[in-house]
Image (cartoon, rainbow, N blue to C red; front, top):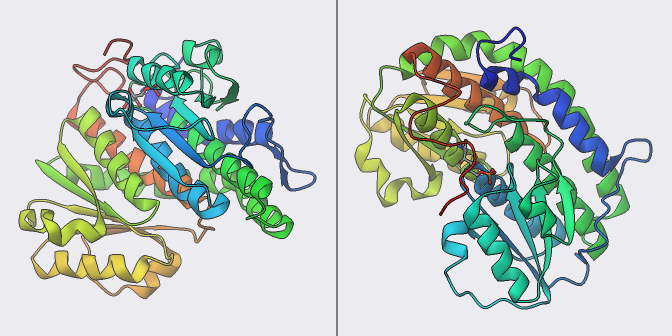
Length: 365
Ligand code: M6R
């Protein structure tokens, strides 16, 4: 049932404040402001490293998770798309832990990666939406994302719930490993707790602007997304979402890679969507934006109030989000990315919930 929404995808985008709050309540003790993951089967404290494997959007959630596990838990992360992971013959040690991220829990390559890790003696954690799935069944620990059924082929609420769970797990791992203090834990959990409310506010705030911008995007043949830090996987997720449902060619790049190739593409016909909260990478990303502007590129700047005040560059559009802590920024900044892809596809008249050539669950190799 789509309720008042035109598509399941739209419904699922707007469900995010509610489902994120479910997901968090599974991992967070809001009375004490602590993380309470029941991850006994996986010993993050003793782990020498973490291997993550997944496909598509779930892989991009894992890539954001890598930044978090390394930063907050000082745990080295090996991550790859599952179709490569399963055949790379990478040396693994039973002292590493492994995480498999899958909305459906049935993705063939992710399952094969899981079995490869099991053969190598690693303890297995599954970050899944479907708790009765094969990937969940074959794991030592299940970390449910609690997103509820996701019908739209383009993943939206599963992505942000995967992020919420990975953030909680990374903080929990940091606590176990002594790299996140009790004070830091409380502060981080307070930020997580604020997220559902901020998401609702942002969804209402940006909707009209996303709709009008999508008219512009629908005229384009190519779009480039740029970001640094956790905004780099978001840039790739933005590009994936746009190409999946609007069939516009899009690429996501680390902003620092611009001058190693993609800058050659810049002209007035290819909008560049820059994702840059006012974080420690902001200045660097703005200098990449300058390089785009100097070559006549048109910029759609997704930033926050502090970033908008700090940059004086002319843009085609600036999307201004509230200033939030960096632990929740990837979830908040996912919202304009999702809505922009959604409205562009609606405007172009594609089959948003069932895009051509795609299946919701990829159970064959
Ligand atoms: O069910 P899974 O999370 O394992 O699926 C992985 C990908 O097939 C999936 O995320 C795909 O990339 C989506 N269509 C992205 O919107």
